Image (cartoon, rainbow, N blue to C red; front, side, top):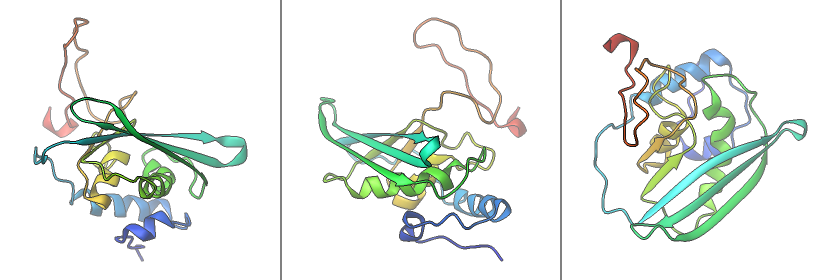
Length: 173
């Protein structure tokens, strides 16, 4: 039976007791709640989010820096160290990192209008990387900026500043 985690508090207090099959099913379910449109209200606070791991101690360090917009002045920094409750499994990092990030978001004094992640968003095999996972759970618009391609196909962009190319779903080729 699929473990249904639809309550944000269930994720914050996630014990890691979910199998790979159920985790993937939950990702598929939550991915249907991703909204892909520009519905931003007036942006005043943008928060950048990243996470680091201390492998030998099985600890996660979640950090958030919030900026005013458009001035881009730092208005708040928070971090938290939590125990690792879910193993490293490619494609399922939301279950490993999500609880730490949600707990750290609770520490913010100012609610962000936009979340920017060092990680995947919809460019994920099930359309639910850490950015879209947290965005769905919090209702805060979010996007991911990943260092490596996890999913999709693209043509390498030119080297000139501002060059880009589209990352396409394999079915959209």
